Length: 53
Image (cartoon, rainbow, N blue to C red):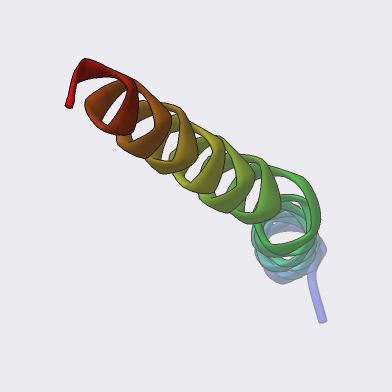
């Protein structure tokens, strides 16, 4: 295994782990934040529509 193969392997590991941690971040923070914001906004809109009647 020469130096170019070693550097290629390290680059592959870096890209793979960066993608893995990005996926974990999205699933644990971004998606729940997005869902919670959508639910709260819908509740607020329903409350405003009910108040207008």
